[in-house]
Image (tube, rainbow, N blue to C red):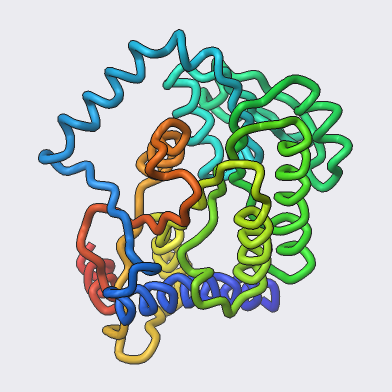
Length: 289
């Protein structure tokens, strides 16, 4: 029972973080630093997306000359990034920890390399023994507690950056989180600390992608409801909204950062295409369905 309560509290802490961060976005919507780039897959944009994908396929031979290293490859978002990189024709290297193998068909076409991201020497010897052009980090701590957050969200990601810089990689793309703008949790502080290290490096181009939330994050309450827990709202349930982004859309956006120079050396806040939903609206929608 104690373990269940701890898990519930942790889940609600993450939900609270996502919603508090989106409250920041709403209050500061006129602030340039809080501008959210919306990934739109609606019909008006579909033709340009398909055109972009068609063009990427014709340039596959060029992409194959670019080595893209992805750490956190077996993670929730990482595996989608790996699959999209392969689809674009890049020489894709998926870095996995010992004992963690490829999932489903996400890794078909990638070179799978085992390394310990908490050990910079392991990365240098096993991953960066060959030249790399682009490094993408999808690393994320599992528990969110201080020791885990600073080990993975900060130190392991920093190890990857330092190994990439030593290897003379030209670009580093980071999967961060929109909620770091109002840090209240340890993983947010750890991510912010690494962002500072990345932006101040000076010798490598970077793109920091901060998605608002994943559908999995905001659907967490549905799983709790199915287990008999009540639906939880903060305040009156109307204080803020959230527009989560689909995993594949996020992966597409991150891979776009490789060649889209307008996304270089920037912090990129990213939301989904739909209007935001309040917690109260989500509760009603859940009750109906």
